[in-house]
Image (cartoon, rainbow, N blue to C red; front, side):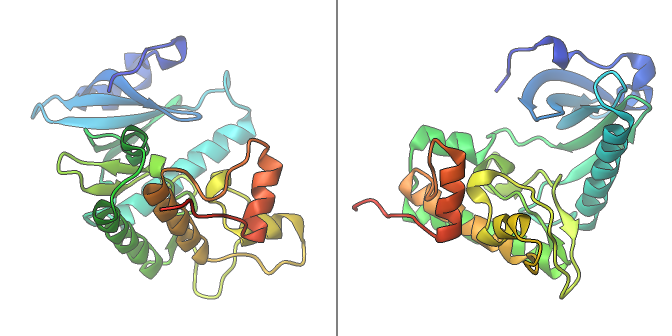
Length: 255
């Protein structure tokens, strides 16, 4: 799916991205993140199509502290993606480039888009289809955890579909290494998929923190959403939704 192009989607000039342009020809915009644009691109030597995530890291948009934070987060994401390369249900990082103004991550092109869009179109999925998707997702999460990696942002928007409707887990921007017994305290992720312990430790300094289990909570939210066609925890007022999560308040609709 091609998206409308805005001023913020302008391509980097050749001087700012020479190494990338020598190898790839960027095409239409197919997605956007908070601080990035995703384009279809063509490998000049082979004609094969890929997707490139382009992040601008300039003083015009970010403070020096934010610049370094974005660069460090992207380097961490790149390192993790290379560590998990080869798993059939995790997106493959093909190439990465870094210049003074831009960072580029080149991935497999997932033509069927996000699981979120597929679910929006179908409203709810059958138990058979949901079972296949969840098995693949849990295999990917199990692989991450076996390698001491926690994803921390599992949601349908970060699950992509290939030509054969097989899933690939993507967007490792919040991922990090977590050794056995180690705990985290950082508040990150997407509100509707946050585990109660993430919320509680952000409110209570004495809370022991959270571990890899937060990914399994998010998997449960995804499972519910696929079958029911709506998330288990939702309220137009976010503070009330977060309270529902901490108290485990949800209901199944009638069959």
